[in-house]
Length: 119
Image (cartoon, rainbow, N blue to C red; front, side, top):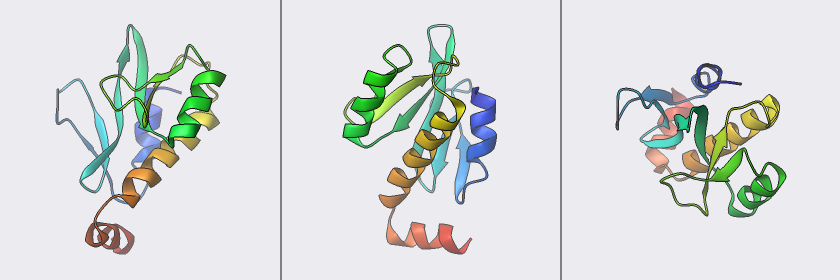
């Protein structure tokens, strides 16, 4: 799995856009007006920051201690940085991406959620 593959997958989800709000080299995936995946680098390795349920975030860090880290520059209780080095199976990364999408989408205003559902 790499950042490009994640981006292509995510852009198929309803209401997802790709933006560069921080830096032209730092792509961010949004659902509606909120970000749910920040694609970056951890050292020289590609990574992605994803929102997670706090208990699940902790469990994933225990399961993949070198590849799932507390979210870099994020709320470490709710966000993980996932290093895309092949340690975490692709299917698991996609599940984490979808969970991040659902958690963030649930926090959108009702109007935004309705626009996404109808659009």
